Image (cartoon, rainbow, N blue to C red; front, side, top):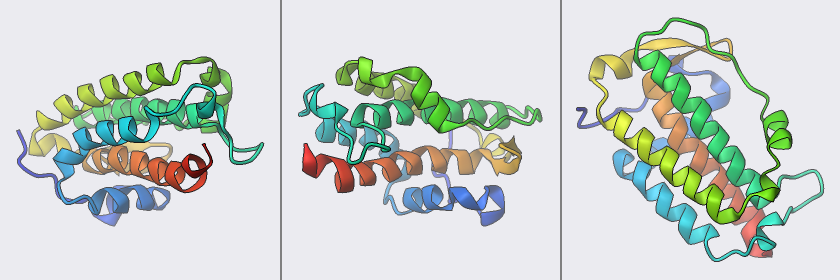
Length: 177
């Protein structure tokens, strides 16, 4: 079991993931962030009704439920990539089109509480898996979306992706609900 996961070097991820890695790196306790984000999502979104969670800041934007559904989709995609790469699977992993995924899912039909619970379960499973990875597993590299990526970078991206969307929710969505 790892005591600490150091931030990835810039050659461990594609440049378009830099924001996620940097956001995760600003967390004072990285392991704690894996659990804290569950509570942060609960604190921000539990007070909302399902009607409030369908709010969109603009017609072309996602609703709060769609943002939460997207967070869950990416938690799954990144964790699958992490599983494959940390286990030494050299198979190049495909990208995905987030707009298509959100559109196909129909997240506005879900109860907000279900989307939050889904995140909680996904994250708990990921936290357990990450805590039990060896240093060797975290160092492994593979290919996802046509770019080299390390297991370590994926762990940081998992945390940073949630931080990115939570910042967006607080800035553009929650003041208006």
